[in-house]
Image (cartoon, rainbow, N blue to C red; front, top):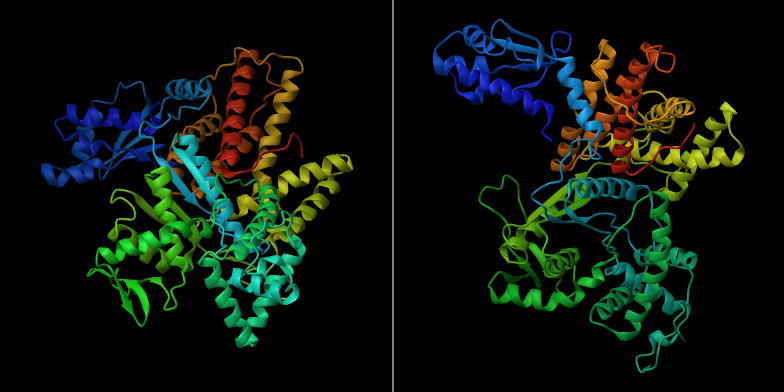
Length: 587
């Protein structure tokens, strides 16, 4: 189903053509002066130079071919050469009715289906999720859902950090504490125990302890580096320990991601790329791309057009150990081999941009990925506290993500209980749903690349551009529909031409749906969906306050209102699902 704006543009282009002007000048847009008109075309201004004619004269020529067009209720030429339009209520209602009767609200599934891998999450095993993991998870999840909804084949990969020095530190500390474990006996050739020699709580304590100790004890750090190298070379006992670490960590991570309504198709880690590293490195050597620099193996990736220094991409350290660049490149090897993706999107912190510039260039230069594979870096900004600095606990440490979610949940529970219209169990259930919306919408409504302030009071408010406000609007519509259904059928509902400005404005917001979803996908920008639903909620609430819906005495008109708000609710529910949260039945 074509977008309304595209249909308007087609008509205006045809009018330019009939008037003897190039149809390219007929591109029409939403008005930047909604107090004057709903749509506008500025093409006559651009055409003036080519046709050596006053813009207003061109606009009037074009207007003569639009005067009787039933698409418009008003069409006028305004000096110095603007074409201003207001859409006909009949035409608009018929368009919205088509959206109402379509289960995708007029959004067609793409004809150009692509295979897309989204790399998001990026937690380190043996460590709990902290607030720094929030943005990658919720942004990546929304982009995944939106791309799938458009019709693409999308694979979400958590890409665990499980192959660096942290593994060596954990192994070293385990050996210090339990030296007699069979994993440390190089002569052991039996089956390793199925049960890990540690719990998730012990594991989460071991890593920070070992990390702190390595900063003060050089000998200890050397042991950890050696353990890392031996793990990467395939030492059997160490790999068995890694499997234990992964099993316990992944189970715990899944529980925490579930609380965020975030899921992954692949739970792959850096270690999964290990088997591809040797052949990949050898290929780079054979092609004459990789060379030694200060003992390390590097590939030049700078371009003559670079305005800032882009260092060589280091493939192996001087001791032969792998780096993030090594595993990221090797991960691309298996992704291409197993999935042949058309597009790979990395949802990561802005500060990693140079790393991915190096990896992407090296991957293309070395033929790790085909030239036509799109490799995209989607960097996100920092989530800051009210003081404008990275979000911390009151003690100044990095806050665990589950603690933040609990804090928001408790805040929402208190607000819901203040209304005293629910049982305790109902309030807890609703608080869980609304607090997730508060967190996700609070993050996603901001442009991904920008830093933002995580303001608990603001995000949990039911007023303003917040998740709870969006949900309150949906719940309000549900309440109206439920009351209507007590005495009426929902069959044979049809949207009628608008009889008021607020009704028309609500329709004009609804028809922006397709563009919002397509723009969010093309720009990897969930904030586009947030902006759309906020405007739609505002329009609905204005309509609600200005219109007698259930008390309307004209039954056909009442049915038209019900059809319109039912469509509004369904559009909003589809959008919040793409953002990764849902609405309760009441609040």
